[in-house]
Image (cartoon, rainbow, N blue to C red; front, side, top):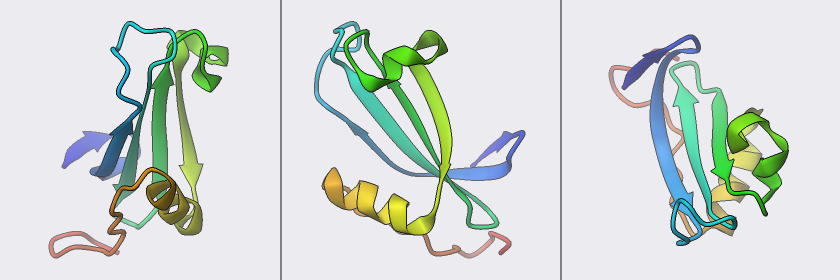
Length: 89
């Protein structure tokens, strides 16, 4: 787990499109969960991607649990959003 201004967060899953990080079509996304169950999607990408509209090609947005599960399904990533032992709900 890692300290942040969001409280204690844990990484749930990561995905990237397999392109090199310096490629203009590179995309990488990471789903994070706070100890209260809130979900955030961190994404970054190259100049030819959706993320190019954001400063430094990076965006962080809060997503609901249904969207988080849909993101996992879309990218073939198993998602476990349950609160684990040691986390506070």
